[in-house]
Image (cartoon, rainbow, N blue to C red; front, side, top):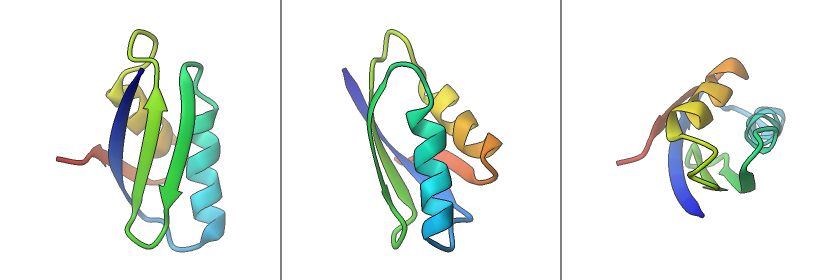
Length: 71
């Protein structure tokens, strides 16, 4: 299992937060998601043999937001 923090831009409300959580939780191999609206981050626990950080960021992008791996 691996964990990654994504910086997510474009979230302005709890509905946005929910859309990001739903997008990430919908990926097979994701075990847990914690989205923090106030600082624009998403912490994701996932199986790194099934999921890439790029696919996580793409799911957020497809939900209508911008995401990149936090450095």
